[in-house]
Image (cartoon, rainbow, N blue to C red):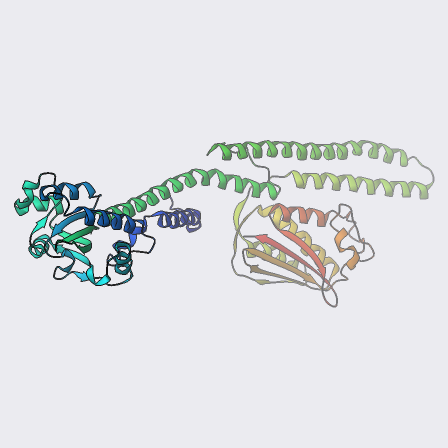
Length: 473
């Protein structure tokens, strides 16, 4: 069954969706506010006010100068979209149940029309029935090309104006006693705005799905690339990755594969060179030992043979070091406390004072044999040079922390940074009873770093050495 995306995989799509949503809200028409509070006063910068004022001025001057049969045609000519002009005996803005508006908008209209504010009527119609409106008007003249339809049945009026009115109504007195009415039908504006809002939401959802599909296409190759990079960082060579995803991702994977191939060749050549050098040194060392056996002077012979044995040991250690770096043990899931405690128990069974404290269980994917060798090396060194060794295991965030402390002689502070170099020995602090050649710590650190961890040495307060291993879990 296909797994659901993890929560963190939705973070980027969600952030993009939120950004698009904010942008769409900013770009929505200003009249979206009508959905929430249609009766609000229109803002001062409403350019539609100036157009209405101009039409009212012109109609006020024109009505009364033209024949009555022409009035309907003139009103029809100035109607714009959802703005209706008509004449009546009574002001439409005083229809019962209309919400009178006496605020700043009415004052601005009065100034623009050069009228006393008390002469104007401004109201908000909240879905008033058409019959209520026309029963209040008295005699009226509607915008119509054919003035003979003025007395038409209500059914035809409803076809023109709808069954109810929602919007602003303005009534301005004319010199002949009639009223010039302006009605701003905002039902369609609200419908249009709602459709815009719905369209914006649909667009956002579709965009989100497109972004999600794109990210799902990108996520898999990016994850593979990230995992491969992490493996290489731990010293593990990986197979070439499949070039999938968008072109930019494919190009990145292609470059990564070339880098991986070059790095593998470089490291392989170095290992082969060191291995060949180690093997080639065996032959002359063996030949020199045979000749040294023929020397009559016993003291000279013993010194030469001892030097040759040191060279032989160095050669074997070099081959071991190269082999350790070349090994590619498979990773598997283990219980880390069990592995560490088993090493401690091995030394305890040998009569060494080695104790373990820490977690009861901690799962970790690692190269178990290799990691055990590194921990064994560190605990073994501590057990040889100290009277007691304390090993502890804990967790710090997403990393396991293994601490190995002893009461031995420690390492001079000025030489701690040099002990990880190959063939580095500190005879003045760690005697040479083991006959070691200084490769144990470099190999241990190499193994730990190949697991994405780190090994740090520092002297304990008072006496002894502390080795701290951190590993990702």
